[in-house]
Length: 216
Image 1 (cartoon, rainbow, N blue to C red):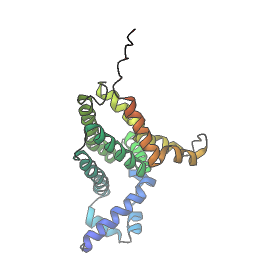
Image 2: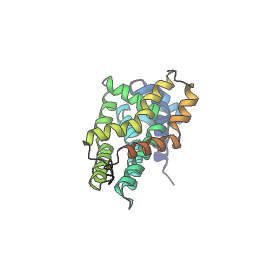
Image 3: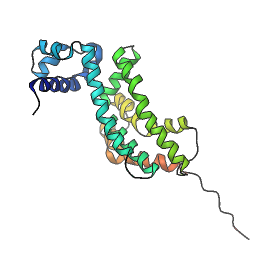
Image 4: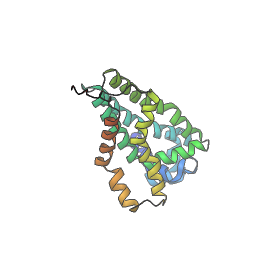
């Protein structure tokens, strides 16, 4: 059973996950966090000391949950291409589940918010490195074309996380697409849609077979 202090930590962090996508880092209120978590504001300062330390703990915890699952996928006894496929699916689903938070953090980082900037700087290279490693392994195994690594990575972003975060952010903000938000959600955001895009991408990256010469 969790100690009372741990329960307070968890309640505040859970409140932060709800509020941060709405407020961003700068506008997140300690009072609002305490009210959401149903604790006294003084308990926030007792447990975290400052809003910056709280934000760093919140974002690190969210990322480590995802990266732990990603590491488990990488450790599976499968061919590099199938491990790559599983990792891309996981990253796309993570981006979908946290699309509003990630879009807000990206906006904060572009505005120079230190916590958001440091979050991307410190964590993005970790999962990017895993994807690039798996791409390289799949190329070495002959399962993918030997294209430049960053070119492959850019294609991967377009199939997975980018629609989950940036295009979804535009739709959530009211940008009108054919069919509206229901069509976007059905055709882009579902598990089946994610899997179909990743499958199409990996199929497109497979080596091109040499044309068969017909003997006359």
